[in-house]
Length: 51
Image (tube, rainbow, N blue to C red; front, side, top):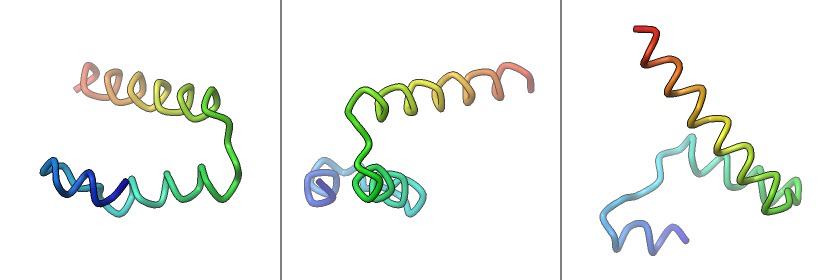
């Protein structure tokens, strides 16, 4: 996946790499991964709206 990100000009940062490694290491289901990412998006939106 990292190679594809590089080709597309959108490489993952270290935090993102660690997150995906955690998903794999802890064998998270696709549904759990999706919900985690959606929760992060919502938290980020709230953070920016509060500023």
